Image (cartoon, rainbow, N blue to C red; front, side, top):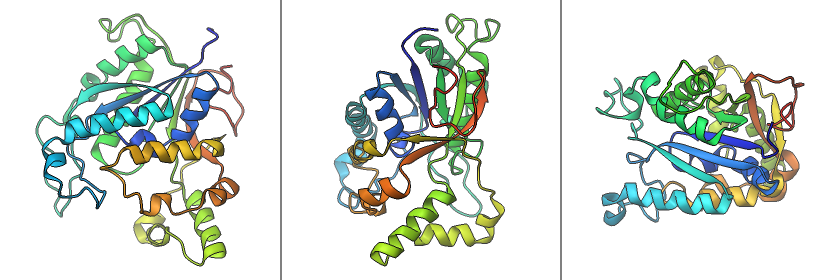
Length: 291
């Protein structure tokens, strides 16, 4: 085992890395871990969600370049490396019935084909730990679900010399995790703390969805690993704000005071999906059993 630890975080779009596990990545960077964010698509079909920028014709014409520049700013803030897989954003289909996905988009690629460039990156970067989304994508965006598929395929294939033989020398990552940032337990804890201390909460809509028929049918995921990273929450927020087209700086993402966040839920949480090393659950370190 080499002395330098390496973490690869695989995400669907630019901005996903800053809303899911960013404080954890910043913590590991500060500890000397090499961290590579892999971004599957360019986010070309993402809506402009910042009301201050909505309707800006220049941004709409050049959304691909704008989002690349935002990603570079976020990368610098977090101190990570970053690589693009080069697939085209599928967009989030809406309507009943849902419209077909656009031709040539990421979600319509065969998982085995789309995984090849990720296998190549894994063999080049040689991560010990990989993070991605669960089989539901965290939420059912087609690109998030496809991101899960290719991450699992690449994790399983990267160490096998008989699979993807043209993609470089084999390297087997040791642990695979799913991001579980928005758990019911975390949202409820922050919701109750905000009601108690301020009389209002930005999570009212979340709580209603949890109690809906759909929410009750969706079981809570098991979180196995809770990484203490509260001191890096400001960097996480700065990185997310760097994706200016994708987030309202006055919106609910930033409405819970930092002292409440650190007191009530000072960790980022993950679900251990695969481990080729011995570890003990619960963990407080993605590299437990690897160090």
